[in-house]
Image 1 (cartoon, rainbow, N blue to C red):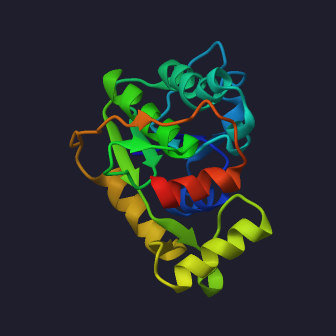
Image 2 (tube, one colour; image 1 turned 45 degrees about the vertical axis):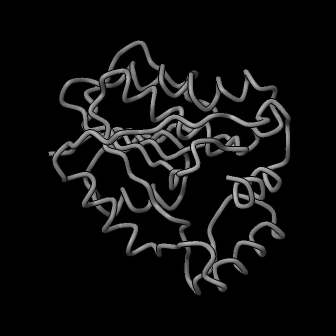
Length: 209
């Protein structure tokens, strides 16, 4: 029975889904950029760790800092709270099949998944399409222009989507399914030391992978 839950990341969509699925559970939410600062000296008996974050401001960080906040810091936090009975769910993006990427977002998400799996955790990988809310409008972090562009791509069916009710069922299924290790292929980073805006990073991912 899941009584204590740690969510790493402050996605309102996933927090809402977890609260709906486990209304009686003790829920702790750690913002992504606070993942190192939020460790306590005393380990809690966590039943479920749900990882659903990314530092969207890190696209303008220097390369090492970008890796630290999106890969190294979350790993240290999870290592602190994970135990043999903990279920670990990692929300990854839809993987690229090109073997390389020009996107900082895609590279960091994939690299964190690889490191978590290499650490020996029984990680359940959850890859979801773009999440849409009421009216089939996109719900992503970004400027109005960026959201408008993605809404246009959704209407032309160039971007796969999932609504909140479908997301709830996907998450529920993933939490209760038996563990099955999934092969995660590494991505070759392309030009990722060049800082860029979030919009440019998304555009590079759409156009170049």
